[in-house]
Amino acid sequence: MLTIAIALQNPSGEKTDGLSEPPGVLMSRFVAAARTWVTTNDEMHGTVDCLVCIILEGVYEMNSGNLRRAWAVFRRAMSVAQLMGLHRSPMPPLKRIDADLDADPEFLWFRIVYLDRHLSLLLGLPQGTSEKSMAAAAAMRNEPALGRFERHLTVVASRILERNESPFPASQAPATQAIDAELLQVAGSMPASFWRAPDFHRLTPGSPETLLETQRLAAHVYYHGLLIQLHLPFMLRVGDNAVDEYSKITCVNSSREIMSRFIAHRTFNPSSSCSRPVDFFALLAAMTLLLAHLDAHHHRGPTSILAHQRLTDRAMLDQALERMDAIKTRNRDVTTAKSAELIRRLLDIEADAAAGGGSCSAARSAGGSGGDKGPKHGEELRLTIPYLGVIRIGRQGAISRELPADVSAQDRPRTSSQLGTAATEAQALGLASATQSAAPWSGSEMQCPSSTWDNPTLPSMADGVDGVDDWVFQGVDTAFFDGLLRGTAALDAAVGFDASGT
Image (cartoon, rainbow, N blue to C red; front, top):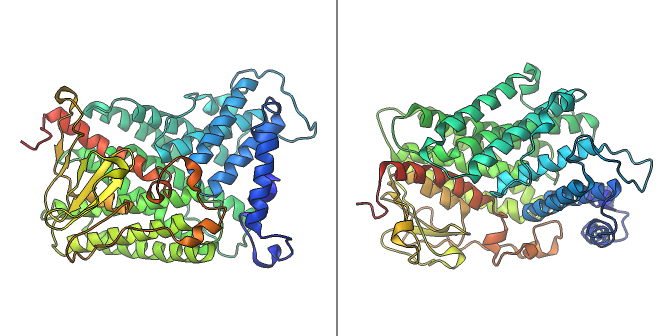
């Protein structure tokens, strides 16, 4: 039933015409039945068959854009697998209901860990296990090149998550450089042909050749997504530090690589729901790229390493927006619709900054989703970021952090950074926005299209959050800002800046 539900997530015209009910109704019914009788049934746990079904449920939720729910499902799969002993070497004897089930327990364990770390990075959540044995020589012996690549990336993802889960002092740069060197070594282990740009010319959706090309594209995106996650905390730090400049260039180049692959894939197949992580990484790449350009406008100098690429980057983002619009129209996809709207707002801000309209500023203040949405002095945009507070974006000034009033003075980190670009990133969220006067990027609070509620494959309000703006991006936005602002806070604390700016 779960396999059929996943297949129905990618409808193909006349192939669904003979169904007795709409695909969405059938999907919901199949998944509900499997969840009730198998994947959440404790009596079924302990069998390889049940574990396979839990993994399929996670894939279904991920394809639906329910990243938080998918993360929870894969965490359940990890718990069940550990109770079965799949994390041990050698593995104990395993129970199977269907003796003919073709499922390799070691590979199942690897895929669970792979997807857990993939989603944990996107959502800013902790990994379920720090095990790194999946890249051992014995595990790699029978793997094809792509399989070895994915196993290496899984180990690197664990190191990035470990870094992110620890306190982030300014001295984290050496650890970041070591992980960067490891990623470079992993990339060099692949044949040159692996790094060719994806080519879907003469391929047809659903063919084995298309599947292989899509897997290669997804591996490229994950690799560059790891680079962005690794270097994001250092991208907007001010100064002439060569390491920080390297981080900025790496983030920009990886963002371009992700966007080009998103465009190629979504031009070929705009209706596929099997590339949700690619879609979310494309959103992060677009925000990262525009933030880098805004940072360059904020710190204007006689030369800019991004000046000659600016128009090309904007054209590429415009092309990505065309693809997002096609997905939105075709699939009634609210996540893609909101992503496109956020990127358009960011593009407007970047164009205004390039024309000399003034730098952007942001301030993070207490408040969560209930923060003040009203306009303040000057032209300002206020955005509520779940768990982080309110980010204010204005046309002039610096980025600073305003902590909650109930935080004691001795616990108050001393931060104040001149990072106008970071504010623009907040604009990319488009959450709970309100503006004053006739700024070219002004807009009203974004609302979810009513058609969303009729599509069961789209994110549900049942993910434990309160409002539309909180659940659409599933926490991907929060994780992005947390990573972006973390490095600047560490630098400011190291040099002794005061939160009040004095």
